[in-house]
Amino acid sequence: MTREDFFEVLGDLEDDLVLEAGEGKRRRLSWRVIVPAAACLCAVAVAAVLWLRSPPMDSGNLDGEPWGYNKSCEAAPMVCVGRGLYRITGEQPELEGREAEFIYLGEISSIVDSSQKPMEDFQANDDIIGAKVYKFDENIVVDIDGKYWLYELVYNYMD
Picture (cartoon, rainbow, N blue to C red):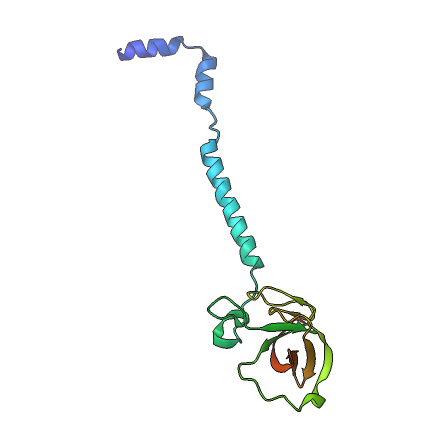
């Protein structure tokens, strides 16, 4: 086709067709673009929600582990009393004969799994339901099967 032939054919086209072709077609986004973008947005939203809901880390506990957790993923024996979280002390002092200094608070009434921290009043992460709890200085003493165990305050839920 020569130039002259091309321009002759082009001249025969109706003006409406030439104007419509000049406007161009509007492209719509394909589902192949929209679906992956929406999936990525959902994944980011889920990750943000999970990150915001994660519990705070308490750096003041043994071995720098959160809430006194040890490497076997079990928490140290803990009790929640009066909105305070108490953990059993590493070394137990001799408490026999000091019962006059104890103030009776109540009994352990519920338990949680040993990998969790108790969060309700008179709750423990050890199977010690019915154990008597006493206030002793700034700490508490728990009477488990006739033996006194000292627990120290590690976290106050009121703060």
